[in-house]
Image (cartoon, rainbow, N blue to C red):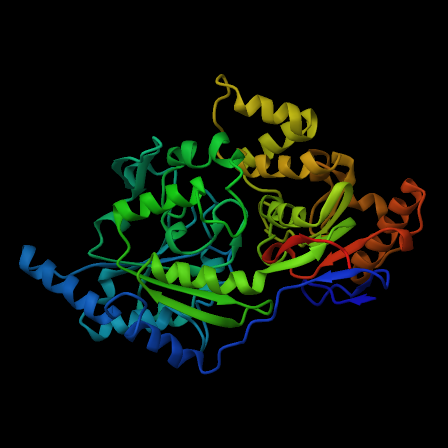
Length: 463
């Protein structure tokens, strides 16, 4: 079975045994005439007045208050999300044009990148993601900085005790607009909506409860589940406290083409988007002895690769094998930030059981980004650590000793050329598993997850 390489064209396709089950999303319909449909969604939104009506109202309120010009903030995702912010189908320019039409000054519009606790984007990365026409207009584009306490505003505590420190530019804006992509999320149920604010614009200390051990360990903190999901409910409470005046969310297919535009009320529009992706993303699949998957667009570093690993648990058998390929092409942090690297190294050294025991202790000092390592522990509750085999051709060999699982470079033949690395790695890895288990591959159930972290396989008995 020939499999198209899911990453850039510099890598060739590879092969899997013919009996491999292929898991992929139910293909959604791609929208045509997206530019006009985006504009229509701003004019006829879900459970909300039009964007222009809200924007005018905010201007009038500001004039009455102190006779000043209103300010607007448009929150955008960072580089880990393939949101269409540029080009003919971009969602950003129509929003800005709508604000300019009703009288907002360019100097009073700010685009705020919701980095959460991720690293800030460099200017070159920003203009690779955002339409350069925005730059030509002179619209400000700023990174949120979760560690800059001087630019955070305290808004009290949530019911669970989270201290709500929110980006001050957003808090003080007259008009608050959130944008983003709705896809399955392995903690919050789904991305988009309220997540633009929490964790997108919160302070680092605000993650201590929101992403603490109890929330991450809860059985309802999982893919495509919003019911009784503590992470979702916490994010919703934070967003409700600071407010979102208008939401523009999209859904995409595997080629990053727009399949849905959901604008309007930040709760109901988001729920409509989640309903839409659930029909496509949740795929009944037979369980497998070997799951081969990939990190997808989001997998620019090992931190993000955790998403495809957790997504595989819907079909991965107890004590099975998980084979992951990725293209961790983040030029400065291919593994992740220092906190992730530190806690990940602890997991690798101690094992999942001891690591979980450690971070659940009252004496453990919370370390930001430990939550992503805790997600890896879910994988190692299912399989032994050495049954994970990970390979990224973009990852320097020096990082592999810190990573849980086996170093995929071990399974590359010395003579492999750079275009055939995935083909060689997967072929040799499957041969290794077959030999170790004393079975022919024909005797083993194998699954290829074509959509990597974006699909949610659910157990189904093999027919």
